[in-house]
Amino acid sequence: MTWLLTGGAGYIGAHIVRAFQQAGMGVVVLDDLSTGIRENVAADVPFVDASVADSAAVATALREHSVTGVLHLAAKKAVGESVAKPLYYWDENVGGMRSLLQTCLDTGVDRVLFSSSAAVYGTPPTEFVNEETPTVPMSPYGETKLAGEWMLRDLAAAGPLRWAALRYFNVAGTRAPELADRGVANLVPMALQALSEGRNPQVFGDDYDTRDGSCVRDYIHVVDLAEAHVAAARRLDERDTGEVYNVGRGEGVTVKEVLEKVREVTGIDFRYDVVGRRPGDPAAYFADPTKISKDLGWSARYDLDDMVRSAWEAWQAR
Ligand SMILES: NC(=O)c1ccc[n+]([C@@H]2O[C@H](COP(=O)([O-])OP(=O)(O)OC[C@H]3O[C@@H](n4cnc5c(N)ncnc54)[C@H](O)[C@@H]3O)[C@@H](O)[C@H]2O)c1
Image (cartoon, rainbow, N blue to C red; front, side):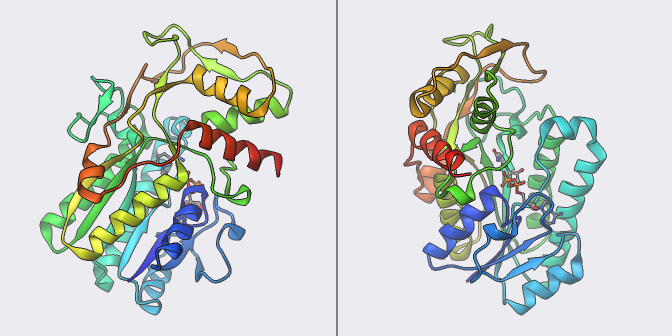
């Protein structure tokens, strides 16, 4: 079985490529390098420099490599940017995926695994979020992820399609320094960036109704996340299915607890600045990972210490 990974030159994609290779699964990467890095993809992995919206290039890649399934990671993912440029996000994430799915239909590829996000839940009514929790996204980014899930569901109702969408919670860590998250949109890289510039990391609000006043989130190691994709792709290779799965550890950690861990791991005795809340930030939520554990036999192996330690080692190696 050979899988085409769109966005395979990005942070998460590069980790999934390694996990698929280790699992003995064939992999081809298609990426337009808009945020990805060519060197993230090993020389022995076929690489197509193209957009998912380039139907001719996608169709050629699917046929030339006898691809049996598509793992669609390629997307724009900055929540704030999506609020400022909603049409760009609808074009890139929804228009791009629509085009990709049409090419899958045209070439007979009937297995699609999709990178969704906990952003589809918006501000959930309960802290412990399972797949039945109402989806009320609070940003165009979250809406485009939910629209992607709906496209898959609708296509599967109209004809043969095996699909799964994985709703990632907060991804952190790395398996190797060269594959680390280069963006500074997530808490751990944001804190390390601030420290390296001699600034205090920021805490966005500490007056929430949580154990220390800061927001609670579920952090998942990118290596565990990559393994979840191996399990899901195998399931699609084995049998007809159409499901969404939460991918998280099932444990809530506060922003201040993450910063305490950064302090412990780096040995830097820093202070943090408490600034105003960010609009639309829910106080607390974390994944109920029961469904993915039961259906796919997947559960997280790494903890917050592993995530922060690997991110710090990568930061020092820059
Ligand atoms: N990082 C997170 O915390 C997180 C959380 C939830 C969901 N996700 C989702 O996971 C996926 C991967 O995220 P990431 O953190 O690795 O981001 P990333 O920016 O590192 O990777 C995205 C990759 O997609 C490529 N790409 C973007 N638009 C493309 C297009 N039109 N055609 C071809 N390639 C294109 C980029 O060049 C990049 O290599 C995204 O779909 C994102 O929404 C990420």
